[in-house]
Length: 181
Image 1 (cartoon, rainbow, N blue to C red):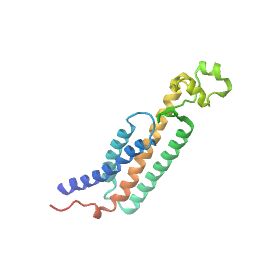
Image 2: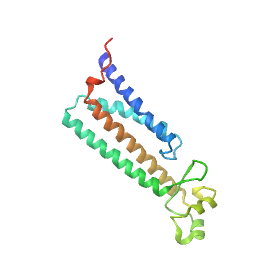
Image 3: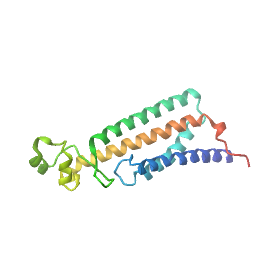
Image 4: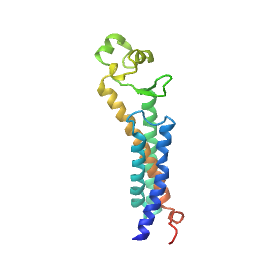
């Protein structure tokens, strides 16, 4: 039982080290602008996923681990592509502040009256005129759906990344064993 707990401890140490990635990404401005605590949520997801993947994969045959690695790579790449597409279409940096605004995909009635054919792809000037308040130009529902899409694609990318690393490292237990007491 003690060896099992030491092995879990080693997996969590690796997960803890990798959990710094979303925090560093947030500092670099790469994480989604919403929710504000996405870096902490990502770090928690990494810790949980590292323990889960380690537990499910550690005693698997090499062919099973390879399937895990491929599935996790698919999640990582799919999440990253979805995130980058959503980010490039719907995230607008506020000049001079370092903050970002998430656009929507459906204009409000008021925005339709003012901007007519430009909706929903409104120019940056429209956001500046609305004092960078997205829900004055796009419906709350459309802004919320984009927020959730950005957060979900980021979390899928993060979960896939740790699952990939966990499945690879689970097969290399000899380098991860705790020192004997």
